[in-house]
Length: 387
Image (cartoon, rainbow, N blue to C red; front, side, top):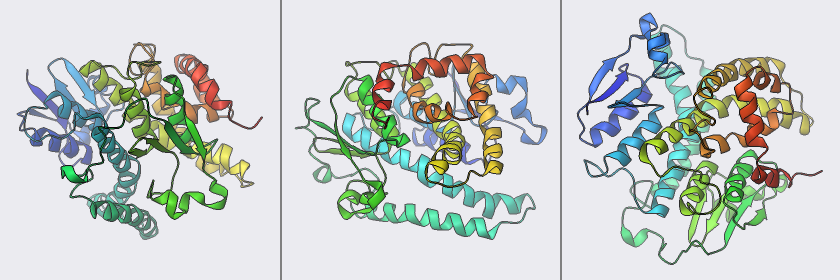
């Protein structure tokens, strides 16, 4: 079946998807999308991607959007062609996923801001904001420092020589699970939700952010970014909450709630909506939780201008969710999955703020939020909060 990629040349997400297709030596058809005439906002294109963005990928009658969802599908659907882009070994794959999450959550937001200021703005006749450039250069420098440390250990982000890969053969699912985290941290709670959905016993190890325990040499050896949570399972250590949830879902596929489909195409669709959460829902909702919940908690003043800005950014995401939920009960399909679970921490906080009205204004989104927030595993997570 013919492969198609709807694209605009120069778009970083399009180039990301193209890179994976070319690494796999795959022939595919370019379908140009004319942004000048806003073709991406036409009903025909929105039927392919309700977010109105490129790329969109077609493999026969199977359609995907979100570039990282596309690359994952291409890597897994065409494992025997071209470059091996993902490992089949569960724990090596988990380490790859962790560094992919670092790219998506840390490298991409900073580098994208810099490419906008320093490359795209001049193309469009706009003036770069040097204060923004300076701010995001500093943020990018911190990420590159971690990369430099990682690349002293291996050629790429996953060790290439077999002698340098931790010995995972002795690590069984029966070994104790540890989670270093902080009660109330959305990322910690995301990881705990997956563990509890799997009915797993967890040794929770509190990390005291108040005394900067997360910046101690001992903790930085576990996570060089100095953030919670950190997951330990035998010799395997993982940071980045979404990488932890994915490993838990796959390593304990036959325990508790099934959080990822074993069907490749259903899994790819779940991945798309996991990427929507990560790239669209999380940036807006995290900014709102900071302004409306965490700032007052720390005795700081909420910036209502910022709140209004990010409410406007969250609304179109929720509009897409409302449409999606006319097609199926959950975002990833007809059963609860990581695509839904990843929303829990921020959705839970927002339900206690004025942003709840944005959910309530969309009946299917409101029902979906009530459904996922009422799950026993999530109740177990939130029971850790101070009364």
